[in-house]
Length: 344
Ligand SMILES: [Zn+2]
Image (cartoon, rainbow, N blue to C red; front, side, top):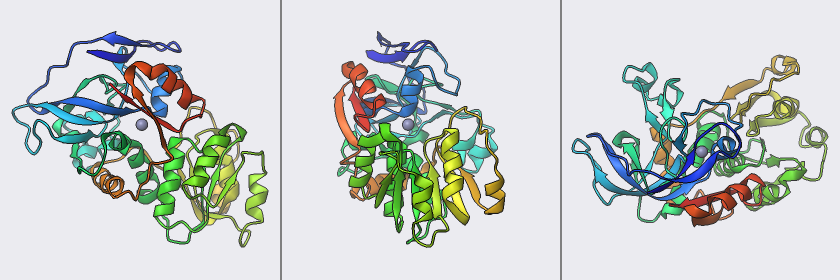
């Protein structure tokens, strides 16, 4: 089979390679990949700018949907032909306290598809059955491939944030995760929803408008803090989601969050802060991290995708064969499309 392999840390060390179809163990399935989303993290590995360790060479891709081609003989609850999606924690230590708590997303020794073990940008990938979720027939496999990033956003907005209907919410960084956070904030009852970017984000800010943002800021170089100071009662916003991850975005979040409000940080990067956290203290702000997702989140997101309540119409902009990976990667990298899906 032909898979998309990231073979070294040097920028652009990604190519299509001939690979063997994987052998599966008793508790695993051979997963026929029908659709695989391109993630910001695939692009980071493509450009060699990731802040995590990669087991080179590795097949990219961790956002995928497809069909079970073969099930190991101890697999229960799933059979050949089932339409499924897979979670991302491919390898977990058996003695993990976090696995026992159902918080395997926070287990430091876990390994994920696409960096730790071979991922899904190939016709087949081997997947432990515990990672699988069945898909309702109403949900297409292209859309189902985006369950994973929707789960990242659901965890940030609906689990790790305190968001009540009517709360004012800002999302900083209109990349795929930021836009999905905006979508879920709307669904969770955000009162006034603001999406903040920079001039290079102008296309993605237009998408933010289409998915229900009440205000978009930053695309024309507006002064965001001044705008917020003149908004509503002038105290700032109830919830700020930082989906950008650079130092300046956390600084902005602290400037625009209201006293006793919350900042949820889902964007990350190696850049040091280089500013004072005094506002965090003085405003008594809750600063909350959010990472990955776990089983109950997947079940909720699958039902929201199947019912159309999470509407990907403006997010999923390109479906193409795996052989067109380069153009899709570049289109996403440049921001011309929000999200691309490849079909191996
Ligand atoms: Zn992802």
